[in-house]
Length: 128
Image 1 (tube, rainbow, N blue to C red):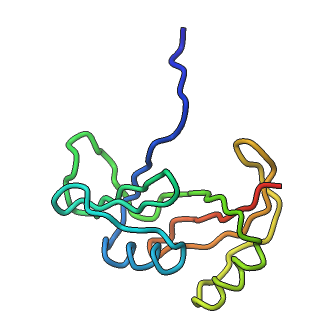
Image 2 (cartoon, helix red, strand yellow; image 1 turned 120 degrees about the vertical axis):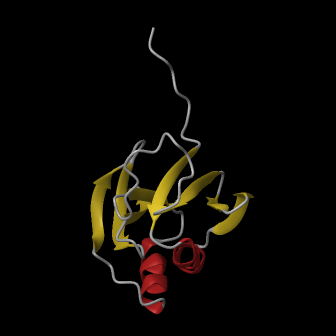
């Protein structure tokens, strides 16, 4: 029998600067940063979190190829995408693509794409 997984608890993003990453995700996406161990930070939103790993620091000896900018994350919001776009424009964040149709884990999506400070691709989507 294979393992049966229920949900995703957290992901880890490797970043060039913890401070710049926290500032972006708090300002643009409304997340909250928390220090969960000395000098280890996570971005919290809803019931999820993103742990941050700064390039050049060893946070776990099991991490082999930590590279900034290799992430691709999709965040769901109930906020109308038009309001999301207006907020991104007000914050000076360029929209890479969208709104476009996409495929989510449970539903079709209507999405916009942006880059974070490390060029991780960030998708912000409404389920449709």
